[in-house]
Length: 210
Length: 202
Image (cartoon, rainbow over all chains, first blue to last red; front, side, top):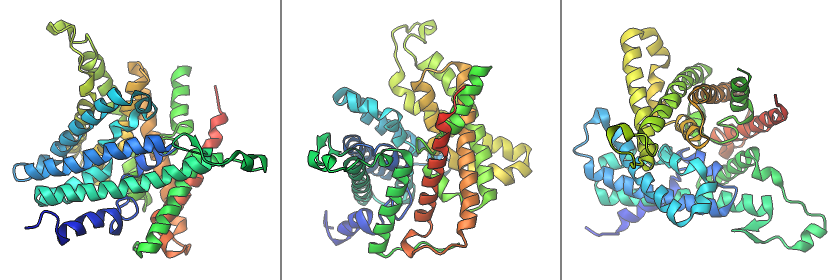
């Protein structure tokens, strides 16, 4: 069995594009909107969530034959919460200022449905290595999505990228104004709707009408 | 009394947990296709948030805080780093217990809201309310008011969206926007409308 053969590549690609967690599965939207005012916070969130997601999938997959099915949700939550505590403590130690800005949203990785959805839907029925890859693929897909949202919000909302001014001063003198609506809640909703629509029109996914 | 009323109004309208903090988006988008479903979910969330928020306050104050275990001979123990796991365990356990109690004593209520209870264990809005309570150092009464109104604010938002989605059923948007896309645009407009409440102060 190849460590990284065709099948494994397929698993990762599904997460990144074909079945992108945000556009296709409608999961993990809370944090996609809440931490994306700046690229800096979104980047940290992406790293944190990727870590939790891939390792939660792997750990749950190792345990899958020992978990009684009626308490599986609580066990999954415990594993996820422990990983989130690690992320939170590391962030507080090495990136205190940014972790302050992210306030409660690091803790809310626990209830990010993306993590629960992957552990419940994939890791419970598959061996550790594919589960880890599945988690990683989804994490990359998710990170790409929130970084896109964050990039657009920061560039068009405050004219900066990672804190550096990217829109030249001449533009402002010519009458250009930052679109501050993008920094507020409604702007985030509209932007994510547009991105989801774009992703779906390219990947050709259609939602069924009820 | 006025203080608590202000806190409630602020939590439900001005700092609506969904429309201003984006918490609980997943079940908000997934379960808002029918008004009946979303009403059940809204009631269940309000109840669970209203119970877990003060309960977690008690745990935080008497178990997790530094020095709170002095009576057990451990005055220097600081268990704050365990707060995530304790909070989520409380919520998960409480939803499980509520589900069993409701199932046993009121089958009618169980039929109406029971099926949503497991969903609430992973609703960001409930855990988010607890985290905000923790971060803002509310008192016990404040945490009770905050929990109930955070749940109620979330419920208000989901019921409104499901009513709007019913109307949207007759529209014919471009294919990629169908479903999730349209729901999100509608939510954006709702968030914009709720921003008008920001001017209210007591």
